[in-house]
Image (cartoon, rainbow, N blue to C red; front, side, top):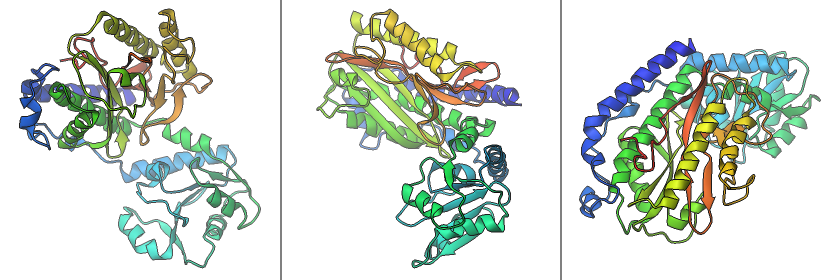
Length: 435
């Protein structure tokens, strides 16, 4: 089933890129050192009217998908001998219910019992707003300002005749909530529910992978529309503004759009030092968007001008490491082996060892889905076995303090037959956008 869905995905991906080719051709024909008039003529918002709405074909997660997720979580709870799972507003609540709520000093969340229907807990004055957001009829328990909301958790479990066992707490639930639940009812105890939540969220369905595919295609297309507009004298904020506008024009929700110029590219997540783009600078870009909440994360490194021998050498090593990580990411392999494969290439060329710089000071990749960073990760000590449906970033980098850094990042999904790219990796330092 996954294989057929993914074959269809590959066809749609090729069709989308083919559709965009004539639209982007005039923009892509510009060199990375575009004349000043290119940005000036585009105006503050950019001339993005001809870019296609790639998100138009996105299909939201269905009510049956949410029901299947809850059923799976309940099975995992029973296997772990947990009586329930408690969620606060955040990505896990979205994953199981589709509800986008917010956190405050008041408890507002969900209880999924190991058996029986899910229930929501809400401040009474927020009930009408909550019901506006609900796509299906769900049991809602409310509390007034002078009441103890945590007693409602135990009331729900009593009504559902929940089995004995501790109450599972999702990893991001705040301490005062966990502590309040523990002290407000029959002695059940509380326990981490990481195995339940990650057991569901780490394995993406074909519907989730399809949404991530669209998000990644939008980010790559936005790079292709934006990078040729770079000009000498620009600052990182200029790139970010263009990238965000192009992303919005194609239906994505921009999440981050970082650009680092010259020596600042040696800082993996940025530098506060002023940066002005100049000829010969490395430009390291890390951008992502969301489609129906599902995220992309793509990094590209280019040279603004003609690459030097040193830049070519480091870029090629980095490319080799990325491909080594991809080849290692196969079902049944511990996640840490992917990090080992990338780091072995980098160390073979005299960088590192380990996390030392010049070299690779961070993990090789992370899980991705509704959150930009999810479990599990490609990192030393991560023994989780790679399984079909998992999605990761593949982003080993090489950072040389005082000179520059190179990071190439693409996301991948795991099929029964091994890893598959969401977007094709950069071809070469001379053709980093695969034009």
